[in-house]
Image: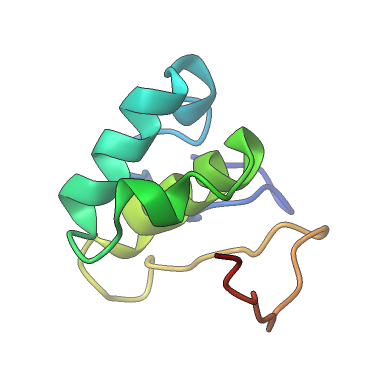
Length: 88
């Protein structure tokens, strides 16, 4: 269980937030694509390792059943809404 103010679910997640930090970049990308098959390796290559880890943690947290314990606490340094321009 995460402490107050920590990113991730407030109930026990399927995978802890620290797990993505122990994976290689390739493993993080593979897990993201497993959960979100619409993501491509070429698209994900434009993101930092830190961003990919946060995205994987978010995907894992939101893949659990919804209910009163299914809460996502957005990290304080992450904007609520943002846009990314595609660079070719």
